[in-house]
Length: 355
Image (tube, rainbow, N blue to C red; front, side):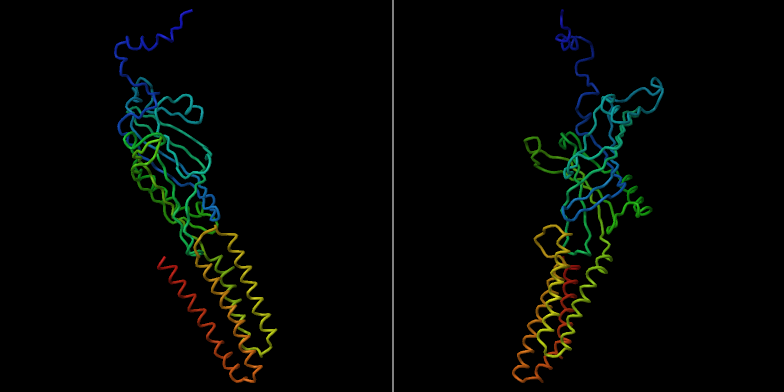
């Protein structure tokens, strides 16, 4: 039996007009470069994890480009638009080229809930997909709990450099997301966070080591601005901490009983340590101090200083210097609160306005 497939390349060359023809199923872009308009619609921010510095969101990704190889006669086909929807039609029926938009900082493989391609008679193509993704992004937590996070997503056309595919921003989709956030913010926001803004920019990464060699890549950078709702932390953690520290200062109105004064001071110090463990469990292992860390550290130092003050006052009493001991207590009643308030104000101004 003669295997005709062996002679297929020769037969193709003999057919008039077949040489140089481009099959729509070939995996090459239709132009150099092919301009792809990218839009992202943020449907929901599902979760944010400060400890692991990642967040999960549901997004609708839309890409538009022109491929004249896919143009068709609307009258002959009986329709102005061809639709391929669902995983089967997309993978098995649609034979054209499409940009594989890859999110660089995505963790694992996101869930594709819906996918669709629309091909118009003039060769315009629109790609839509809805996916659930988990993204890693560094978080700046120095101002915790008054911080604002700028979450990033970096999107590139997988397998294509900037000379082959160039990404552009679909401004309409960005405006649609911001309008959706303004109207239905409660549906997008998550506990403790509110979505402030969504912004997209395009950049060209130069000399990027890709496919084993350095190339220029077209990239879309999505920035999601999330602001922490700090009221819960302020009322449940910070305010009780300030009240606790102020209660420790009651020792300055006590007599020179060293054991009673030290007991109160040590109880306060142990409570501060418990607060530190509480904060550590909700924060990543970062190398810098946050505003809350500094507040806890200052509170720890202030409480530890009350022990030194009590020892000094007790020593004065043992040497029959009661008047001086009482004077030290009277000064401490105002000095300790004054220094503590000044430290808090200084730290707040420094963290909020200089970092």
